[in-house]
Image (cartoon, rainbow, N blue to C red):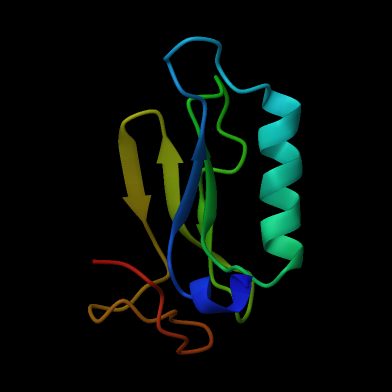
Length: 92
């Protein structure tokens, strides 16, 4: 089922409506999605930077660092490929 999502960014965030989703549940879903092969899974609105950065799925190097509303792109060429292994990163 999840194989159709490979290469598609997935955001697991805490909703502000009613009761926010428990952080432990989001972290479990994050780990489960990663273990199932999803490459671009992120945690949002949890009060920390855990699960917010993008790493190259091929070599593991940090390519996009996110801190609150700031984004620092590194280790990518002008076409969005990892400069270490030439893997195309899902970025627009």
